[in-house]
Image (cartoon, rainbow, N blue to C red; front, side):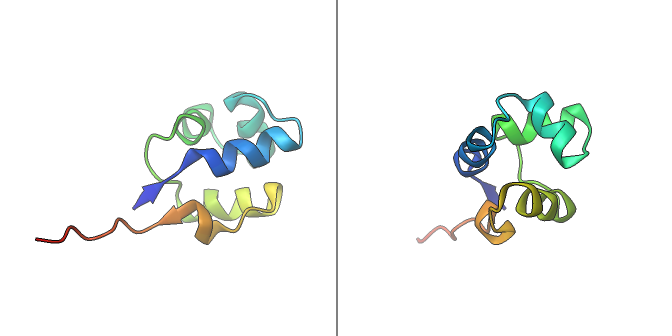
Length: 72
């Protein structure tokens, strides 16, 4: 799975969440999970993506996308 942090960061900053700690509080996730989201390290779990969808109105399907298959 591939994750683009830009979409989440823009949505979060749009409602005043400017740090990973802000995201952790809003999504009710651990600080390390929020740090990974904020910094683009790994795709969010489905429950975390769903929480982001509820909190930031960003579709979970837009946050988590399958990696494109390499063409020979």
